[in-house]
Amino acid sequence: MPVLTNTAQQGEDPRRGAVWSITEPERELDSNLIRLPPGDGIPSHLGAEVDTLVHVVRGSGTLLGEDGEEPLRPGDVALLPRRTVRGFRAGPDGLEYLTVHRRRQSLQIGRRPEDA
Image 1 (tube, rainbow, N blue to C red):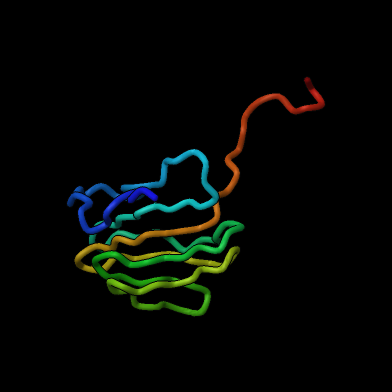
Image 2 (cartoon, rainbow, N blue to C red):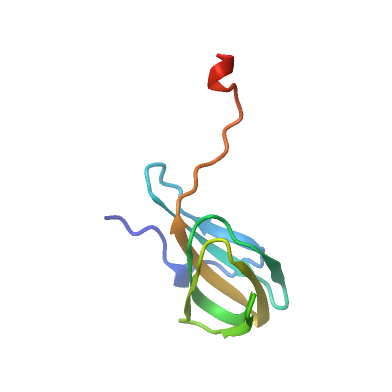
């Protein structure tokens, strides 16, 4: 089984968003390493149809939910059930976290079977 990445060795790239994702085509899981610069965030939103496991890799921040706010620090693991409200706010050192969830089917643009 191959090692996909080492989160401790990801560069200090200041870019925001997914800085690493699984790319293997035949898989049942998706995983992304998300980076938020200091003070940045992802507004609260309704999550998708999949449960999502979040593991804080470095930095700190806040998990925003329907029931309030939860502090996040390295090593924390949170389960975000499907279709729940969630958002993130990075602390003064930024926030980097790994997400893992069941792979969702991507939308395909093309002809419908009845049009063929």
